[in-house]
Image (cartoon, rainbow, N blue to C red; front, side, top):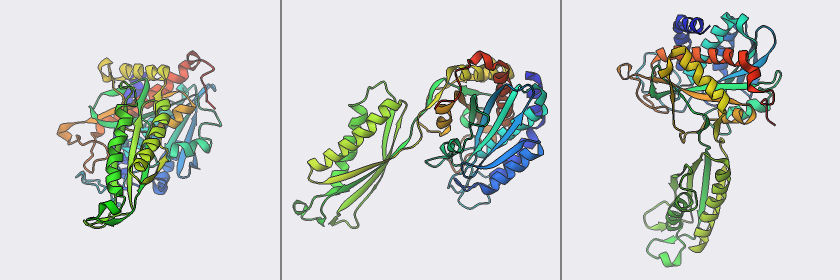
Length: 405
């Protein structure tokens, strides 16, 4: 079966590339993926796969049922693009001004469609049901995964395990990266408004300077990471924006700061957010001012379950050779696939797409981001194969490992 899957993936590579380029030329932002959804629905329809649209606003789900009942596997790809003006130099560059598939979601959709085609051709080997989940708004909090879950994407029939993947230029073509446990960080947005009392720049003693207070808060907040946290606990706090004032000789009434907190531990995440608010508030008051700290809660830590990750790793090694399945470290980027993994066991991995000769070296979220499209053979085959492997061995994963409340 392994040889058949890999042979089919190689055979349909031109089709995968063709649909990927169409999607790349027509990127759409979060929760605006209307035309993208039409393209995906049409492609799934050609395969005889039933499609339900409007799941999580602009998301859609295709359902393929094989022989003999059995378990249910979810396969997910994200759909949205980024507000970036493309500078990749490819002939099929974005036609939507200021919008680009700079995170590889066009590749993710194309590889999932490739897997759908492989599985539709091998329908007699499917011992259960496959849900092809095309999710909107991965790039923008609160994200489309939570919306799809609320709309019942994991129910009717209930999903037993879910798998996803992300293309990357951190690995060369032919390598897939796996890690069980925490793989990607939580991501929360922090907004702090510092209040003082405006005045003349030459008379600071008659004012309460929120610019000075803001500077002290930025420094003090680093103590949350360096002095209030276990040094072995990965965490990042970045203040990325400071806005205040209108002239060199005017002390303003207020200053606005914003930043992001990334953690790999949900318990520490909750405590850190409390400490950030407390530190900012007490620092401002100690200097005669005040502040308001607000948190926009983002995605939770992405935690891969060990059995499903081991299966995914073994699947890649069997398909492409032992050296193709590599271990990767956790990273501080965030992914709302984490919401799915809070509900059902599963795994998320990296698909290498770097190739210096093909100009595929720039990182995701770059205006120059490119991928080596030969990587799609690996991604499509991996998704199809891990699905069949899971369904054929579902009983060995235990009957009590289904959906979590």
